[in-house]
Image 1 (cartoon, rainbow, N blue to C red):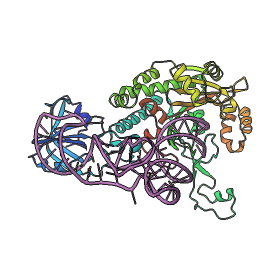
Image 2: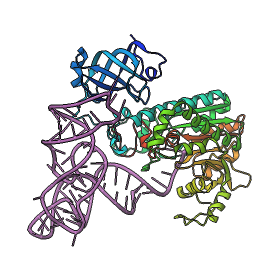
Image 3: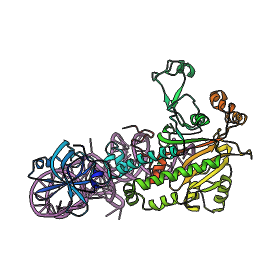
Image 4: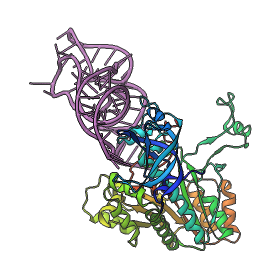
Length: 461
RNA sequence: UCCCCGGUAGCUCAACAGGCAGAGCGGGUGGCUGUUAACCACUAGGUCGUAGGUUCGAAUCCUACCCGGGGAGCCA
């Protein structure tokens, strides 16, 4: 007999006999002559209630079937005479696979703090909140592929290991097979000649450059994979390993790019709202009371499109005593971004055309000579969810920008080559997958939306 | 990396101005009940983050370090 997942059992149209349920015991309540078991198998938020008669063969096992134990129950799915659930399982046979010593099993029926659950990251997906979160994470990932596939984008697996030591963003983690202590007197280059790749290698900080190469062949592509930044960042919004979605479109300008970002965020959000209503409800009740209202603002507004220069004007006129002064040419501080999308507009804001000095070399120089065609999507509570740009497709301009920012064009010969042979205007952006999950669940710490978070000094699981 | 706050029972926290270390939940035992984060009674459980210092006496004051949280920077 195949197992029936709890989700299917709970939504059954009819009674079923026989039925087999397999899962983990969330709680046991003893009554006169029989016990109630609540079993969860991860298929959905809800548990299924199982009735075990004390004088049945299974009854003898009950003393060892405690919170956390893994069991199999065969019996009949029948209408529940009690309140609170439509269906329950009357057990005929129970198999106990693994006990969970109640003296040491860390999960209680009561609510635990997120900080504590992080210390038992191997067990936290067994809680209601984290089970719901990781089901939402899975559905969100699916919605990404669905979105792009429906629009004719191809999924590009950009490399994880990279040899370009300055992709533009962030510090690289080194990848090496060398012994930890180099021979005395060896120069840096000499050392890496002996290494696996014969040169210094690192983990990717972005798939963008590779995506640009492929978009100039396949038209529209996207990457969706892990990204690594060896920054000593210690904030609720940064992780050393995170997942990023990076679409790239040929024959697309900054306006097309902003259209795509807005459409993607709305599509992913709508997908979660439609496919995960029960799991989302948990977050709306216990994590963020305003969650549904906030998601409504994400879904049902046209996002504000605001040139950087106008954003600065709004901030200057706001009269707000910002800790950091607002001035043209300086990057927007977190407090400024929050003011714009949370207080002033109260909806997502796309800020674009930033001064070139505060943005990356590959962003397309505007005709004014001072700004670049960059855009950031700011959303309430999370801040920067998307960062992107139209790319500089003019060989001479790009070459000059590389030199201006103190880099060596020779390291980017292949990136420049794309501008020599059939160059086209193109655009793309990066969307932080975990930041999306924070936005859609109301969870305020990135460590709580990743299965096993990697942050400075944390690599336990 | 910088600034602020914190670390007391398995978990969440209290202990005023230095003077015998507590509660709720969880665990154990017994009772009750088609129960629903069940209920009632009893009970076990602590090197007060670590190391040093001040004091007759330190969970409490001081110093250093470790760990956690929040803010800032970096950005996704």
